Amino acid sequence: MGAMIRYLDTRGLDGSRPTFTGVVMKGIANGGGLYVPERLPALSLDEILQLADLPYAQRAAQVFRRFETDVPPSRVEELTAQAYGEQWDDARIAPTREVAPDMHVLELWHGPTSAFKDMALQCMPLFFSEAISMRRGAGEEVDDYLILVATSGDTGKAALEGFADRPNTRIVVFYPAEGVSDIQRKQMVTQHGDNVGVFGVRGNFDDCQNAVKAVFGDPDFNAELHREHGLKLSSANSINWGRLLPQIVYYVSAYADMVRQGGVRAGEPMDVCVPTGNFGNILGAYYARELGTPIGRLLCASNENKVLTDFIASGVYDISGREFVTTPSPSMDILISSNLERLLHELVGDTETVAEWMRSLRSEGVFRVDRDTFAQVRELLSGDFVTNDESLETIRRVWREHGYLLDPHTAVSWEVAERLRGDDPVLVVSTAHWAKFGASVYRALTDIPYAAPLPDDERGLTDVELLAEVQALAPEGACVPEALAVLDEARVRFPGVVDAGREGVEQAVRQWLG
Ligand SMILES: *Cc1c(COP(=O)(O)O)cnc(C)c1O
Image 1 (tube, rainbow, N blue to C red):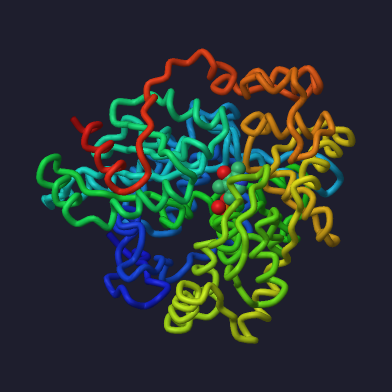
Image 2: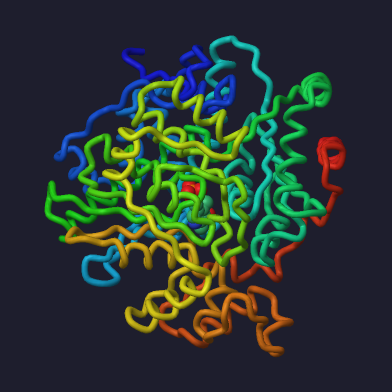
């Protein structure tokens, strides 16, 4: 194999320089830093524009190839064809649509779970499984992997769907029994596949995440898994580079489509507005820009958990004394946007400084970037946030004015894009099908504020039944994806709920393994 891009650690503590499949398997660097590519490929404008002639899977293969992975190019093409195939309900996979003049929506929810996590999680598990096969093929002894996921909703289902029946891997997902929507829970507990397990945890998302983290940190349990089952633990969470690379592809692809559709002139910039939580999606846009995609500004949209808005305004990332707020866009309810560390590393280029900021965040709950870095942040990013009721108002307004239904995450993005847009066309990134968060859409269309109870008639309905109410209110434009429409009838395979804490989770895994 010729030149190959290797990966560096943002904190400079891990000098192992793994290959692409190495970072996919490992996830996080030794010492807690994140892996970033040691150099980036450059795409010419022609190369980008020509992607418009290819099906999406080949666009992805092309970008992957330019990242010089250690998976042979012909195999990359097979895997992306599998990742972006028949399971998507739109053959274009990630289409753009002009909803208002110069406001184009990038729809990232045509995958099997109706949320943007599918863009990465239909793909990354294939490379994970491939990474293990490649090592075995080379004579290495490698365990199978058990992926453990703590989820607040979208990630769990997308990871289950991505890893279901993938060779060399198994997956168990833990969700807070009190903290996911009716639809999200039903999506998970009805999951198909012979290598999957799902458990509710008594408690909230923090309890759930802490319990799973404690299992990762338990050497005895890790040894037991290896000894009795030949398994090693991995997390496959959103800081894994294997999830980021697929998220670069759709920005390059969207630019090619925008030019082809006349939304932007070849070579002229578009701005991109991203509803942001862990900073993974918007980081994909940053890398696409670095590769040469004509992207002007990155508009960073937050909900009431607006730590990023404040960081972009002040250069201070401060979670000390900040209350976690519940919002209609739960997948953005995050205080620590882990992937920001990668952007800071790219801007600063100095691992010691990044390591120091992350130390300060961990111990004091705050860090302040230097003047030069702050200036770079300001040039690249603009940020704003949207309140809970404003996001519902946006859903209502965009439906009335443009006949297009937004989910609450996309509503945050839309509203911020309208506020911050300049002269260039804007790509508003849409991260979930409206039906995935149908209860909020119902409130929006019927003028019920976020915090008010639903009327008596609706209170007893399941989320799926509420979708029918939305359809009655918005007859054109309100199709419900088949996989969501059948959820009330689907067979529950995983009714189990366990106690929060390390022991509850370990016991659940033991029993599930049999
Ligand atoms: C995960 C998610 C987000 C946030 O994406 P990040 O990569 O964490 O910034 C936004 N919207 C939806 C629907 C999501 O599932």
